[in-house]
Length: 318
Ligand code: SF4
Ligand code: SF4
Image (spheres, rainbow, N blue to C red):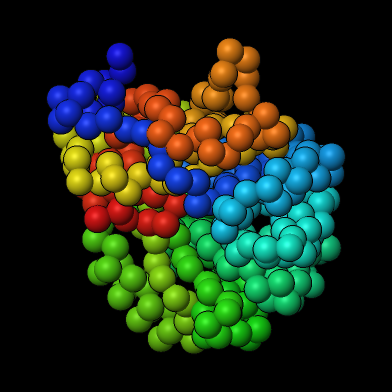
């Protein structure tokens, strides 16, 4: 039993799935950036991207479910050739679903993608955008030179299309700590972000999600190389908050990889913890009803989701 499972047992908590409400699809590891905190090890040289055949099989499966939300992530999900095709197919289902694009912002200014903001607005795609700070130094240190300035420009483009202002065009930002520490209180951070981005750049947005960095992927390598891994793990374990368990995203999200494999969450996906029913499970093998009450696969990295106020793709949990 891993330490996280032991901790749940100490608190008499059993971690099982509820009704699936979100299909989170990681369409690949290709990205225009190589951020220090990336848990996907994404970058411009990665070759893993979803094919059209896999997109079609996912859409076919989705059409037989009532799952209301499709959450596209990566890498930079916009960089796969069938990104727009995927969204158009989801939107044209008999029961159209809400689509989320997890966007690094800078991709929207890259040659070949400049008409993408209008496409996203036309398809009423919600944007959840990474913005680890409202100051240039911190963002560029974590994500690369010039990323802050590019992100600001992209946010201004999105605002000009109605994102962050029009109720059909939600724009949320994601904060994650620049180093080996837990995020501060989400509500206070949101107030600071709103004030600073409005004052200096005229930018508006809806919500700020604060997300804890999980000790896997490139962030784990960074912690190991700077001799901080043990201390960081200890701080996550010491901050375990049982009240967060009910709201963990693995309870209502099905995570799918670029080949259609199924996981409990994107973190488990990066650790190769694919579901198995005797053999490895792909989405099209799955009866959606069979996911309910299924036991969730855990590891020590799960302490990142239950520390302090908790952490999920929708920010703090409690
Ligand atoms: S954190 Fe996001 S933007 Fe940065 S390298 Fe990873 S996938 Fe790309
Ligand atoms: S990493 Fe977080 S979301 Fe994933 S299984 Fe563990 S607790 Fe759940």
